[in-house]
Length: 236
Image (tube, rainbow, N blue to C red; front, side):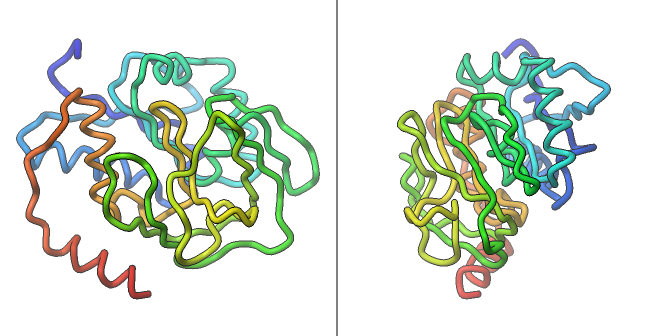
């Protein structure tokens, strides 16, 4: 990396921050600092072009109008797409999956072209998915169940170039009846899990960090409070 600090891009928190998903950037920074690795969060708002030079990126959830703003901004400033093409890790939460997909349909029935980082399409479903969601991950390197809180009406269909992040054991997931939750394509990972997702799934956080650092392992962290949170949420 060109600079000593790991630079974590928090993308469009001014419009894609409805559900507190900015906490994922905080988790990444803290897990690095606890290992003695300097890290900083770079906030990228609607006033900023999206740089392609950061080490990892996170995007959160939002409602229809905010999704439209985010989509236009990312299309105008394609730094995120260029970074992903180089293998930089990206975490997309909930509506960010839809923004990064091929297209999504709004609640009013309008189809909006997405950014195209995910080979997925999303349409509104009859019933909104609200509640705890748990999955068994299918992404190589993940061994522990994933847990989060879903709150979405979108049904996301995976295309041939995309794979699911996990198989649903509780909750709805992608909402199209195929048992999948989330999406993985290249270095980009999407999930409908709020929580924030990385606070509830430290193995996923470290997976992203290892990719950003270009390493195959990280020093373990002894965080019993995180273990307690996971046990509690997996029982919920």
